[in-house]
Length: 536
Ligand code: PEP
Ligand code: MG
Image 1: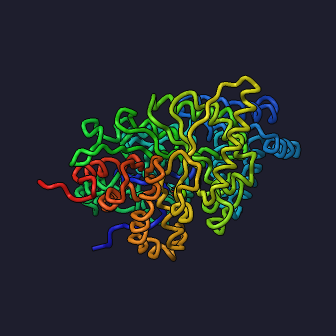
Image 2: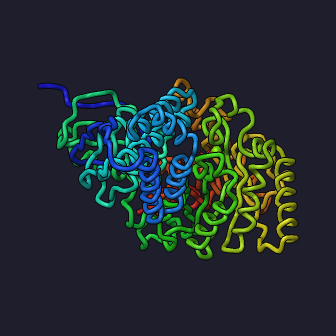
């Protein structure tokens, strides 16, 4: 019997999807020379305008984050640097489509050759723009595929992802692609399972496939029993859009012996809020703002940040919303900059922000201005020394004074500390922070001296788990003794097997990815507050 298809790629968006494959033929990339009435330059300008209009229309129907990605494409389309080389080619006799395609091919190639993965990933946007204008020139409709399919192809354009209706499920398996692409960002926020870098294989449209975005595997669905998928679902598949992540009847949560616990959500993208109901969670325990920033222009856009934070606070009503200052560095460089693995121990998180005050001040102003809209709390990432909190607080005070002088409405949020550097965990009383949240993903990396993104040392990272739990048992009481609130927002909080130990350390406030909540709730409600199993 031939071996069933099983392809190992890289998980770009978690969860498991099953469905018939839809193999996307590479779009006809050739520009057909159509000599029409009117000048070629005018036809190309019209096609660019039409593509911009279509993108604006799509952006108008999209959430803020998706709209930001489309705005990036609109900005690129409006860039004279794209139009001018096309006009020159037309001057030399090329037809509009041929000239545009040649210009864009050179751009796509320059992006794809970049060393930095984030820049390479923008190549897909350039390809998307190329095709949109060519379609506008040729009067063609954009492609689509049947709902519920597993889309298989080399890469997928952000505009195609956004115009497709994912409400009936489906997934994405790409032979190319990148975890850093805009589509990967969108897939994560919409809960669409996605695997990239799949080795090339014979897959035919209609073939049943399973995409496992957690393990980065694409396999023949006929060889994977439905029961295996049900087990996968229990281990945390994203909840389909519109379905609350948490059953209302399990809320509010208490331990079996009646101690009230809080369960908050970790959010990477504001659009994830569409999957969550504020009536079923105790607030947002961690909003990672880095993923909002797709370009240097985003970093400088204070108004956009004010709008996003205000929208989140309005969503939450009176519940706390904890927004983390930009945690750039290492595997998450600022947009447009190269990754620097050494910065796991260098300029990262609050260190980088204090060294690059423009970035910090824009975000601080946006947070101060959004604060009156709800119960905002601000988290400082990777704090090591008390002076870092003091300097950040001084920046908040200075920007607040400037806003007052301009008569701009604002409020000062409480500042909290991500406890992820061991030195900070051991000396909590030295920090002028109003609350503490343990970031065990980084704490484990810094305790085990094993970079969290380095596959060669991942067994060491995992082996340090017992040491991490012992470290928490030693340091959570130190934080609790300060009288300020202490929670946990690292991945350990969503791991049911770690919950007995975390309760016994003294944690009562947990924040985790929404898809981890159902299992964590069930586990926590069966435990006593000291972490022991409840009887009966
Ligand atoms: C952590 O380090 O535990 C954490 C929650 O932050 P991140 O995973 O974004 O570094
Ligand atoms: Mg961290």
